[in-house]
Length: 460
Image 1 (cartoon, rainbow, N blue to C red):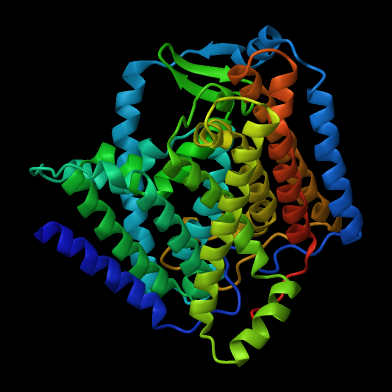
Image 2 (image 1 turned 60 degrees about the horizontal axis):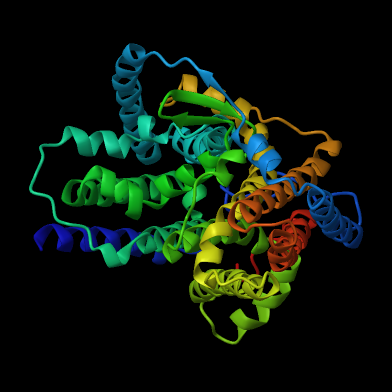
């Protein structure tokens, strides 16, 4: 009981540190002006995206051979993985990760106040949340190896662990993910090094305490939202860990092999991951500015407005997806329950989230990479003039391609999952109809957000 009370006190302390600060005009962790609106007309971009997704579905529908689909998704090449080297590298990497965590805290508290010159700001947002996340869905999940909080929890003396409530499932990680993105948007945590340092300290205390009480495997599997993000994103990577070592596969095809089954909580986490990547850009659009300004003027606190928006958007995305699962049962004329269908097809949404993430953060990462490299060599005393990279105008069209690529991969994964679940040729295609409509909706929403210019929040 004492450990649980301590965790709640630390959590409330961390949230209070953010609630008591004024909302920021821009969050460095988001796009925040690092990219401009695309030169292509918005209506043409959105329409083209919807047509491409629909055409991709028609194209994949031509492949109805179950064996051929399984052969494509099952293709792999084993990569040698020496066990002796893994053990030595593990301890070295964990030591480095703990050291970097400590430097982030120290430089956040004592380093320069300018975001582009502060080691903590650049490493957390540009190097880790933007750059490292992209490596996860490109080369696989290395987070269990470099996770500093897991390393600290395993170093601490073992105590009598409490059983984790099974009924909670992954819902704490869903709430944690929504809360982290909400905090990043409504507070200057991505601009204020001191606030970032305090939040890192609070998160570290909560995470290490929770992992100690409930066990590292349990905590980082069910509760920790960051581990959940990297675990799910890693299933898109061409490099996957198997019983025989590391296997090289076609990108995203591992999603057709691993099931969510009937776990509504894990389906909700995938929906939350998809929504939060959209939410971060949505609240920086002119549409949101025009919508939020009159609401704030009538007396609604901005913190409450943003909180209700992230919850409402998640609920709406989840509702739309669950309705699609119910319709899929009818269009496919199957006795499989809607709950099972929604869990079965949930992994097909991950390429959409990854496509939007790279569209949202690649320009930001490349822009700040020179500053990140410069400050990393002198974290305590960076040079006064830190250079950033100016991207060419044509780069603004790349986010559209990444969004579309993610949706095309999602179409294929949904097609493969459908043919793996249902027999015959017509029923697997019919069951996909509602999900294709949902994906077209997600595509057009994502493309609309990407094409919008950055607009500061209306309440400042």
